[in-house]
Image 1 (tube, rainbow, N blue to C red):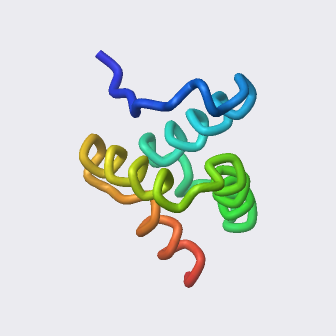
Image 2 (tube, helix red, strand yellow):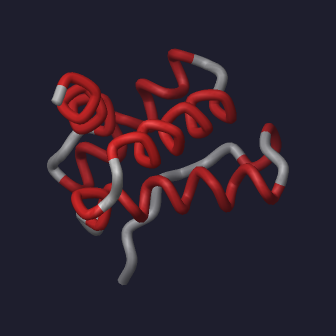
Length: 82
């Protein structure tokens, strides 16, 4: 069974949900490690612009971390400094 983060579908368009899910899948699968730094950061910025709510971003990060034992925030922090 595939793991799923609960999204409030009423506040996002279908295209945005697809982009959010695509970003989570990318991080969960470790495929981001093969990406160019600029491309990953660009996807993260797009993700942040879609979420556009720090509290919700933190909530999604906690859900992601509980399922995949890694934090979106910490992954991106590491990539941005490296």
